[in-house]
Image 1: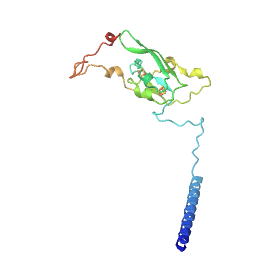
Image 2 (image 1 turned 90 degrees about the horizontal axis):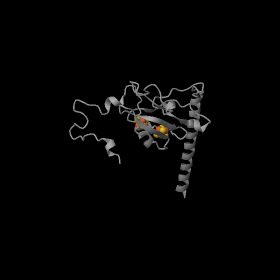
Image 3 (image 1 turned 90 degrees about the vertical axis):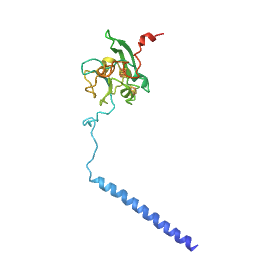
Image 4 (image 1 turned 60 degrees about the vertical axis):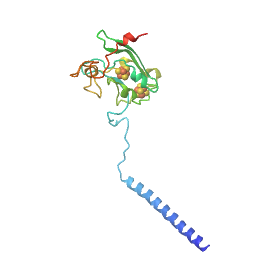
Length: 190
Ligand code: SF4
Ligand code: SF4
């Protein structure tokens, strides 16, 4: 009995000591913050500069030579988890593909950035613009004319047509070791 009572007393002393330590550590934190400069930022008077990787409003960019980057491959549309991208592909007389129309419904977009990751031509890019709230839900549907910009966005030099399908010193398409000849996709039509 005497041993039990001694143990209880020791435990109670420990609890009290822990409580006092926690109390003073709390006071110390408050005391330190009393002398710190407040970090409240007055938005919208002050707008914090965002890193380029921030994911805001989406744009469609152009090549350094001025051509539309989008080749209407539908990859962004396929990868979009909320199905908010739609388009129709078309082809120019020289065979270059483009989007006849391109639509993003920002009322559904969750700004996840997957479309940007999937795009092989760096056409679709997310920007740092986050101020596009509206009260009319239909105005969140952006057409190609609202999305297309006259610059390259984050990817200044990339030009898909200078890298994809070009002839190299090692041979043309289908001439490299173990490579199959290109398939005429139109011959595969049902
Ligand atoms: S950011 Fe995400 S949700 Fe928005 S269009 Fe791209 S893939 Fe879809
Ligand atoms: S934006 Fe990119 S991924 Fe989407 S259709 Fe155009 S080229 Fe393909």
